[in-house]
Amino acid sequence: MIESATIPLAIIGGGPAGLMAAETARAAGVEVDVFDAMGSVGRKFLIAGKGGLNLTHGDDFETFVARYRGREGEVRRWLEVFDADDLRAFARGLGVETFVGSSGRVFPTDLKAAPFLRGWVRRLRAQGVRFHVQHRFNGWREDGALAFSTPQEPVAVRAAACILALGGGSWPELGSDGAWVEALRARGIDLAPLAPANCGFEVAWSEPLRSRHAGAPLKRIAAWLDDRGTAVAGECVISRYGLEGSLVYALSGPIRDRIERDGHALLHLDLSPERSVRELATALRRERGKRSIGEHLRRSTGLDAAKCALIFEVLPREHWADPDRLAAAIEDCALRLERPRPIAEAISSAGGVRFGALDEGLMLRSMPGVFCAGEMIDWEAPTGGYLLTACFASGVVAGRAAVAWLQARH
Image 1 (tube, rainbow, N blue to C red):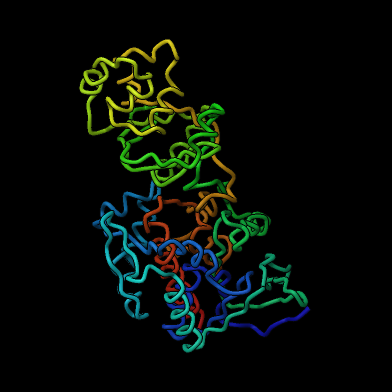
Image 2: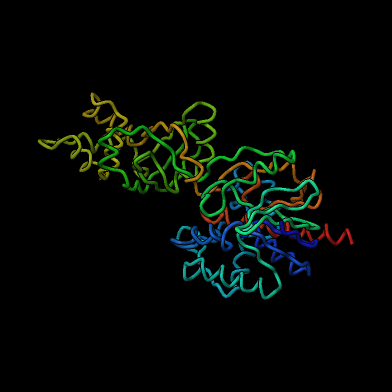
């Protein structure tokens, strides 16, 4: 067992929240040690940016805040400290220019995460931040020391203050495995169960649809839940197990809640939102001659093969030749979602440390000097840069509060 001398501030977790907490505290003159379970920091950040790093979003502030379903008030306080514009300015300070794409999403000009992360870690090291990788957090010893396992031997670290930025429960192979839950639960911390967010959902497809159309995109559609809430426009993908993609992710929280309440959720798709039921029915009444019903549906409506297959999936065969029923199914294709995919496959997770367990500086009320940041807190957001922005912002809030707490003790 290796035991360290007392250090001023230990930050556990080297993702965006933890690194931003380190940045904030070090800028205030506090000595900082960052511990991470993986062989290098920012693993999930790097993978998330593999197809193009969506750093933040160009929404106006109020629209941005509204993306944090059920946690608008709490996350607003973080964003008032550090918002999307601040994040873009921070990136610029690392030599990374950004641009706003056609969808409003903000990306680095080279679209890559690696230069951003490398430049940031290099600067933190130059500022004196000490990094300790392959240190897996195991909770606290009876004497209050932080306990870590390493490839060599266990390590005990005494810290005047600690910021936990341990991530959620998605992508466990990158270190975000939710293993911290038991350590906090053992300390009596109030936790909401971790659940998949920004995830796919399972549908009991017929074998013909699964075998012929898995992987097919559904573009330019709209979706809503069965309470006929506001429709969300976008696109998704038919998978072998069900549906995935940005449109489904945007509704994943409400869908998950509905499944938990009712055992399933009905997701309604408008497969041709630019046309009315009357227009579609008129087109479908045209003489089809010797064409099959499927070919007639495609030619009359302009729907692609995957969308037509969905119509035949939900509409009983005896109604396939009925133009009015076909048109109605195009405008309201109701799919029964049975369950979310496992949390390990999700882009992010919901649940974690409840806000009631934290003060406004994100310090655990029952553990003075221990702060939380990032995805391990009980909030969620859709993809589009909202997740990352709030993680960065929470790191700033926790970092400032930890500095103030340490200063008040001296």
